[in-house]
Image (cartoon, rainbow, N blue to C red; front, side, top):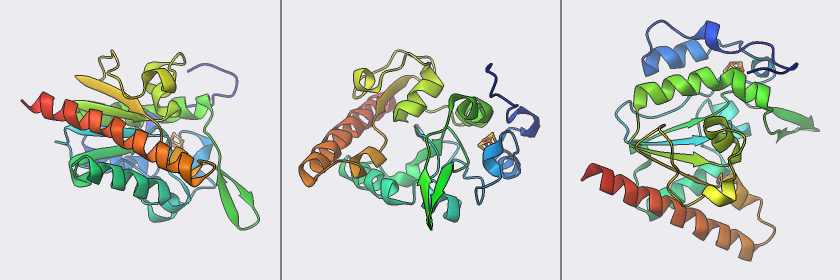
Length: 215
Ligand code: SF4
């Protein structure tokens, strides 16, 4: 966590007791980096401690920032559809993001998502590290390049890693796929359908791994 832009991290805000409830409450007042100031609220991970499957995205979007909940906007709907298609119940998944505050740029009345910088990802990382320690998933799915780089290092290449088992000690089974917002950014219907199909197949791979881990 070096670099001239780095100005601290979430560590001083971690609670003594590392339960999900305590972590969520403590994260609500985190000032570990500058992103808390313009955002509405912290959007912490959601799900049960005993979840066997954990998914990690990039950061909350506009809807999530207003609702205070992960993956409730358009990308969340894509995720829900794909989960349903492969027989995974969303309530059985622990879903979180690498960065817990929405980073955006205002254009008129719209708030446009801005990709978090490495120093912001590093600042927020203590929360994700603790979520992983508490949940200890059997299957970990990284949604997009930001999550991949945050957890596996800067050499992570999403297109090489997606839909495959990744060698990592983060969980017994680790894999990656696109962030579902990439489906929404597809240039036309045909490309969107193709992205959606490929995303669903990647999640099917994770669902099969989950079934195998349970055996
Ligand atoms: S983005 Fe993370 S580190 Fe920065 S203030 Fe929000 S919760 Fe804290």
